Length: 117
Length: 154
Image (cartoon, rainbow over all chains, first blue to last red):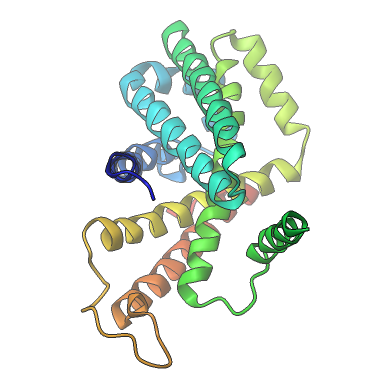
């Protein structure tokens, strides 16, 4: 029987997932529009160094928001999928640790990229 | 002995969860939501690494792009699958937020009566699911045209 605190934690977990998903719907749509045919460019043209660099520096905060929302939502989702699929108690701690380390690494790498460019 | 039995049952549970047999419509959307989610997180990990090369300068970026281009048609097919995954995961996720966070599209709760049709599969819910499928397929075809032939419809 889970304690009332663990239930509270799980429900906050879902609220976090919904909130990040809503943020991502807007921010990811914006990101996809920047590489879509609406820009008047071909697919190869939107991948040139100057175009990608310009977008990332000009909309740095938007891409930062996307990085944090996508990494936290995505990895937390993967954690839930793995825990529910391999529903063995001893795997939970290992899965949680791997996800937390991967999350920290990706956020550090992404933040460094956004600052260094 | 008991443990062995449990282990067997556990293993069959894992395999059966991957076998899409006698699922209802909502279960298909749920399974597809998870599969597309896993595809997207794997892509996100690769994408963060890819964008990191931007910080290493134009030469590193060109090398990364050349490496991806060397995959030929598979690069475009891969991106098309990711585009489809993002479109479906986003659209279905929005439906789930309306369902689970706001209780919309679900209809009124009723007593369980044979043949136990889930109330979550109400008419509104089915319309929402089929609308999502139509929109996602249309946008996915558009993305495919853009990726594979470099043609923008708009």
